Length: 359
Ligand code: NAD
Image (tube, rainbow, N blue to C red; front, top):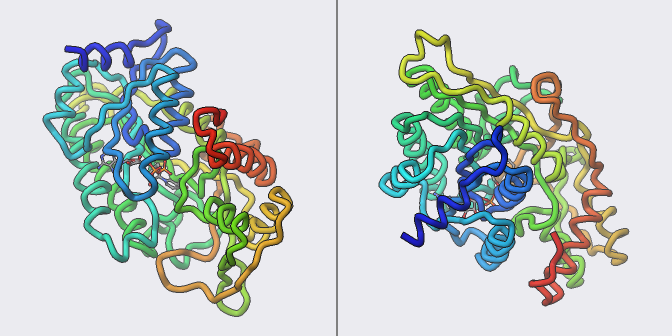
């Protein structure tokens, strides 16, 4: 009873035009920011997360506290748990699902392939099965990844470019997710929007990502490894600040059309979209380190090594013209400005005054 009350209260919207959104992966980096942004503008939001131990679970618990302070309840559970998902849909008539739960990271896949199949393939299918049978059927917006472009794609990447050479199992599961989305859209009339995020960074970020562990190691005086591509080539990423990604996610939810129901013949085809959400300005990883040195006022001990064949691509660069045209997506934060906000949060969060760390 108490659980149901908390679920209903969290999912209650506060404006008549508002959405009622189930956010999977809500205790994750992007999930936390998206959930709070939705709640702040008056939408009903319920979080779901299995709090896996891929990285420091205490960071997920700290984000959960932040979410609770903002009025977002996070149900602890797995997207593979059909009976839990069905129960949530019985209690709440979700208009939208923001699906962010996934096993992230490209290198972890080499030792833990099953975890990618569990969350990114089986979990996605299970979630779509429940959505397809829900009444009303929610519109779904989900996180794909820039990694679908893989090896040998030309930059800048545009949505029409080839995605047939994934460089890692992670990338392969995201690509498979896009095919699965296509099938559920085509057969069951589900409205589905895939967002290909490009290297998202910012406060409350992920400790397994380079900008985060470089900061940690530079401050500890440990050496850091910067990879270079063959023939002294540049390794660069289209780093995208979290606030820009959040705006893209909210715009995708706002422009998502209702699902048309099984077959969808009478009401026309259901919506199926995919967008790049990047920053359109790739920065060499060496330059990322220089910015961190400047902000932290500490010289990094750099080791430059050839890039191993462990699942990373050399260069990412988004063409965002479709997202601009259809979502009004326009990133505004350059890397130095965004890293300044990350570093401020990092120092506050890791200073021991965790309770005080600002939003
Ligand atoms: P994250 O790991 O911080 O968040 C994912 C959350 O999902 C975690 O809290 C995890 O506990 C939860 N989760 C994982 N498997 C689950 C399951 N089976 N059931 C329930 N919860 C589960 O990652 P993030 O950076 O916030 O990424 C969010 C989404 O964006 C992911 O789908 C990721 O693949 C995608 N993405 C992220 C980036 C990036 O740079 N951060 C880039 C491209 C794509």
